[in-house]
Image (cartoon, rainbow, N blue to C red; front, side):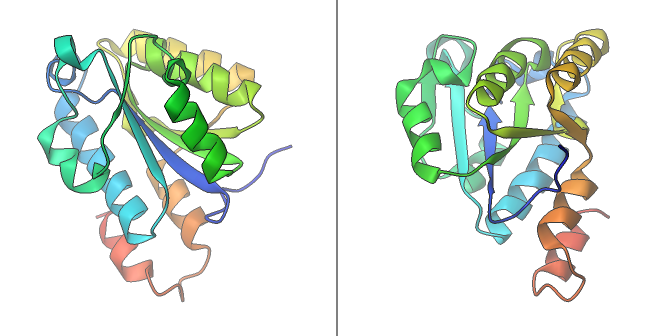
Length: 181
């Protein structure tokens, strides 16, 4: 059964957008800009944000341009799925939301494995196409195809924003609409 994204039931999961990893990613600059837009909306709408870093000792920390949004210390992991960190899993359970909007890198490794675990936990997954990537377009596309087959919903940033807002009379409409331009 397909559902719209419900602002009351969703949280955002930021995966591995790190200093040494991002420069190797296909269309890294555009990806960074799009992730900033998603996180700006997340902050404006006061949604829960969880973020993790893959082996920060080797790959560095979350990129500086995202620090204003992340605030909290990232969950460290070495297992590719974000579910490799039990504290992160506990945070997701504590939030107790049924929908996850996931963003980050790499789509064919950490995102795919995390999506699998989210779906196993009966959490609906929405993947805005513009905010995930891999080192190659082919790896991203294969990951998207696979995650869609598992039941994740591939959406656009605009879909996420307007489903969160639901109404042009929403007090945050103008602020969020500015992110689309």
